[in-house]
Length: 220
Image (cartoon, rainbow, N blue to C red; front, side, top):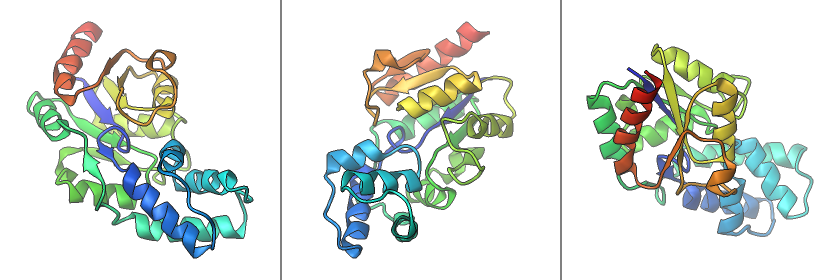
């Protein structure tokens, strides 16, 4: 049975509103201007340190150094329990249940640090759905490096695996890991869908169980 590995932010959860709120709280502590929601959304994907670097650069500030380290720590401490504005995308819970009932082992591979990742899964009652969870600080490398995806696939123990994500980073990680990629077209990507290599794409999670079945049959 093919395993299914999911990205988190922009794929299963829409966390951009909370990330935007936390980012502006941290910027205020530093006496810096606010960033827009569109900016915050566009900075998501490569983990907290890169997010903070991008926010600082957008404000004309040095993207590294002592201020960056201080802001990463302040962001991380607030981010772990920042769920008030975060929502599951419609149909996520039902799709995960359907895939599990069909016998597909499930995993999560995200650039979000592991502690807030697990906190988010607990918040939405999904902690027990995944046989493996790989966060942005679980390994020295982050996506688009293939190592996190390969770790998640290995921990699943499935002979074959599919990666479901929403971004350029996810598409590149899947390609480098040699895994077929299913693109969730309603997430945080910046490029047109056709610009990202993918085996399939979908806009509604209700489509995903049948799509996975089709990809599994084609691979077999």
